Length: 185
Length: 185
Image: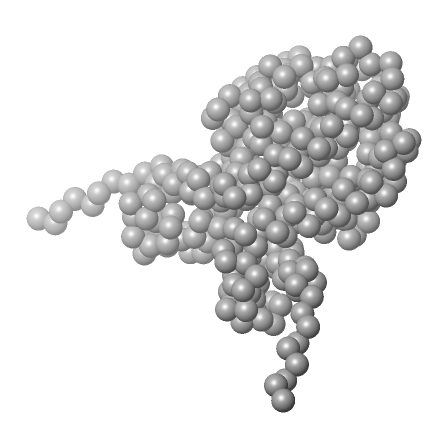
C-alpha cells in the first residue's frame, strides 16, 4: 500500500513563508528577505520555498499583498457606512501588531521604487487609500475643494503612520487619533 | 628624490563615496549599498574604501549625515528670520535633485530601524524638523495648542515628501506647496 499523500494547505504554507519574511524585514531590513534567508527563517529548504515562489520578487509581492489584504479586511469589516473618522482610524497603526505591519509596508514601499514587480501593487494600495480619504471628505461634507482635502489628509495619514513606526513613544495611538481628528474637524 | 605624495582632499573623496552610495540606493535600494558595491560604483577597490570607512554602517552614517547637512544648509541659507512658510518649503522635495535626496533619506530612515549605528542620526534629524515646525507655528501665531499643531504639520510635511517620491506626477512641487500652505492657513 502506498503512503497517503500528505494533505497540504497551500494558502497556509504561503502565509507561513510571508510571516517569516515579515519577521526578517522587521529585524534586519528588506535586504535580509532573500529566498535563502526566508527559507531558513521558516525552517524550510530553499528548494521547498521555490515550489511556492520561483523568485524573490514573487515572494515579496505575495508578502506585500497580504499586508494590503489585512488592512482592506479591517476597513471592510467596519463597513463603508461607518463614521468617516473611524474608517481612517482603521488605516493608522494603532497597536503593536499594526505598527509592525506598517514597518514592513514602508520597507516594501521603498523596495517598490527599485523592483518593478512590486510597483503595480504599491500604486493600487496608494490609490485605494486616496479613495478612502476622498470618501471620508465627502461623508464629512463642507469641503470647497474635496480633491485637495483628500490629498492633504492622505499625506497626513501616511506621515502619522511613518512617525508611529519611527517614534512610537511620542506618536502614540492616542496622539495619532488626536492629530488626525483635529484635521478632520 | 622621492616622489611627491599625492595631495588628497579627504573630505572630497568621502563625498565621492557617498555619491556612489546614493546612486546605488536610488537604482537598487539600500541592500545594494555594501562596501564592495559602493567601491565598484565609485571605481575604487574595497581596500581603498576601507581606508575611509571601516564598516558599511560607518559609510551609511556618513552618507546619511550628508543629506542632513544639505537640508540644514538650505534652511540656514534662507535665514531663521525668513517667512515660516518658506522655511518649511525648504524641507520639501521641490525639484528632481531634492526628490532623489529624499528617496535616499527614506531608505536610510527605514535602515535606521535595524542598524543601531544610524539611529541617533535619524532621531536628531527628526527632532530638528519637529523644532522647525514648532518655530513655524510660533511665527505664524494664533495656535491654541502649538505642540499639537507642530506635530501635525511635521507629519504632513513627511507625508508630502513620501508622496512626492512615490508619485511625483501627482504630488508635484506646486501641489506640495499648495497642500502645505492650505494647512498653514
